[in-house]
Length: 260
Image (cartoon, rainbow, N blue to C red):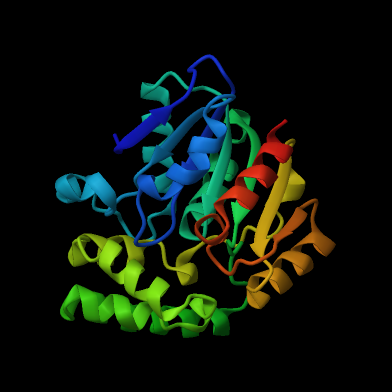
């Protein structure tokens, strides 16, 4: 069972939140504060993250580990007697959410994906990504965590962050345990993810994609996906890859609109 936190009325519609790589269930607190009066909000620590790091040995993931992540999330919700829910996932959390939707579609009321990749489609792209992720995993396992984090947040996808915001994130994430994170990172590499581009057309629920206006890569990806599949795209101003961090009020307002 994964670590979790619950807020709101347990008899209200349930909304489940999955954070991104390096994050924790607390990353959603500002969003949950604005939704908990009307929804039962459950945020979950993914394997290797947050309070799950204290039981990292019991939650080691196989490679690939997406199906195991999906099993652990749904087992946690079953223990909470949550049978049907809206699912919100950011980045890595969104990719795991896609696998949950594939494996347990009957449980979902809707699917909200924030800055999330549905999967690589060419073998060349998968090979390049596998090599890139192996390099990052090696850095994570061998560098001091603060040095790794400083490099991580210098990637182009985080270019909207100011120097102060980057430093704050490095400080916030520096308590993480590198080996537990490295296991999760390798097990959930995009190179090892299922190709789920066609999944929305196989589901009987609404699928929404929320992207930051400044995140040009994922805006383009979302628009391409929308042209192929029943995916509704929503762009949030004044935000990049991590929309709910940069613009929590706008993100919460958009989420509430989609949930009601």
